[in-house]
Image (tube, rainbow, N blue to C red):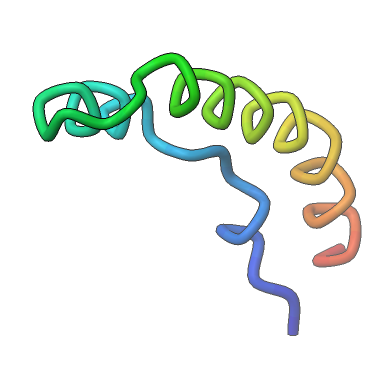
Length: 51
């Protein structure tokens, strides 16, 4: 059985948490963008496997 939640992007609140903790906000924003773009591709694929 495929877990479709693994195809979901990272929460955008990770950026706020990273900045408040003193980490590189730009790097985290890039990771969030990348995970969102990959989620756009992988989520339909994962849902197609669940059919």
